[in-house]
Length: 325
Length: 293
Picture 1 (tube, helix red, strand yellow):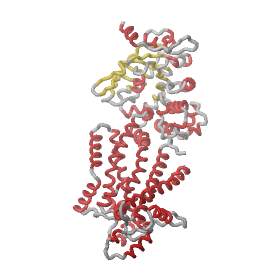
Picture 2: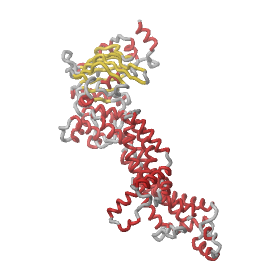
Picture 3: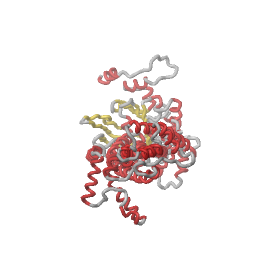
Picture 4: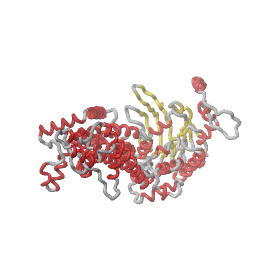
């Protein structure tokens, strides 16, 4: 297992090189760069623009720029420099550090929310297959899947505005700095509830359907007959014997879900004004804030690999037949 | 042959008596009668072989004994299954669980899929013990004894293995150990050797013979292979299309089969040293003609 983890982490390096190289190339295929906004000001001093270009290496061809970026990022002297955001005027690393916790928190809570709702529904729909419950839950699941996320987000905002039960966006209240740790916790939780539901609802349908299909497959297995023939009560047959076998594909799916949420929550982050990383990437691309884009890409690709790695470890732990070495 | 089993007494009340058992499956309004009014009995310590081809209703009959078939709208079972005088067809779901595993235990055809892949074999044996013998203090010792009984080497080590780490023969031994761990009075072996290769088949039949001698229980052996019936079963019933076409002591049936289907089945056993160029098959058209006349 240790060698597998090591191998995966080593595989991360060429992948990150490829992704960042492609991203730099694509950004330079688009016309202009960040300094165009400065150039458009008539009274801008050409000398000043030239100085900025030199400072950021923008006077070089794009591939040279890429290698300059790479040289700074790779921690030769034990510290990586991900560059400087033109737009926010701060270090990219610092910027990511501010945004990442909010996104990770949202992805974890929405995933947990989706699982907690979808798994029991899927199991019940499988056990009572073709019953009224099965049909109604299927219809609701597909309905939830069909509603676009931004629309749900708008509905959630409307609800929050009308009832005043929830904050209208953001990650913390304005007076957060003056709160006790316990109040801070509840403040963040309060802000998380609506985004969590909106992001989570979309994945409930697919998780539920996967769970239902797997569960039905496993109910038909012969080990179920063996367990019944032993005299094991029906409830234990379902939740001990069948459940452990049916959950496998969902563990893999969770690994992917963890990574896709970085980009998947973009709409929700924008509509609900949630200060996550998706929001930031979106603006960075629009502004051609290239170092922010590269830094965020490195971050989300790493999350993808780590998410899948965690899922694979969980899978091996759940199913003894799975061995990676 | 039958002298291995001295405890079989014909005079006593049978351990299991099946009367007028009818099993019907329904799908999309169509009723399919899998078993059509069969009756048979198994005495204490006796071994009954149920022989027939695929689809003759023998496995369904075995499953129906402890109601392991799907429930009402899909499958309908009528008639009586009297175990020790109690009708298992009519008793509650709760009551039937006290018979499953504890009084009537099963061995199935495919050991590879009949064991749950995500639990250790020790864990699966422990489940049976904890369910039916809550008074057992040292469950681990009991499991090791059961694995030892089915001649698994190093039971202390194998105990922690998962099913996929064992060979097919070993898996079937584990299934047998699991069936025996609660000392059932009736063992139903549903094609226990069909999925195994021939040398392992012989080992498993030897093991079952050995266990029967030690534990003096009744056995129902379900098979399509007359070859393993001789030397193992006291009585045979032959099933064809949901009905019993012939029943009697093993020796009589093997040496003097009356029914055309039984004759055909016996003719299908390949014999060593016989000058036979092709394997015999059953000609159903011929069979139907002889049945109607």
